Image (spheres, rainbow, N blue to C red):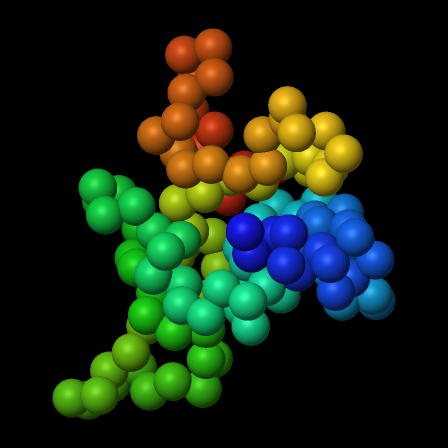
Length: 122
């Protein structure tokens, strides 16, 4: 739903297909930073907690998109900083007009017996 809402406000294009200069994350994703897709949609998503699978033991669940959150003390908060906080993959080729294509999924999703892998470009 977040992809659709975001795309409606950005030339009907998903973040991974829209240039950084136009508010998207295309160049970041091409460089391997898949988390950038979700960072640019942070106003729509609200909390990065949903971008983390609870069974994922290799990564750390982020609690906020706020980069200025305190990282120490009793009010410690984990900020969404990149792929290390992300359990999802993103398809570079997904389009709103091609509903048969996968847009995103978690790394427990298998295609041909292979995991999408966190933060991977497909």
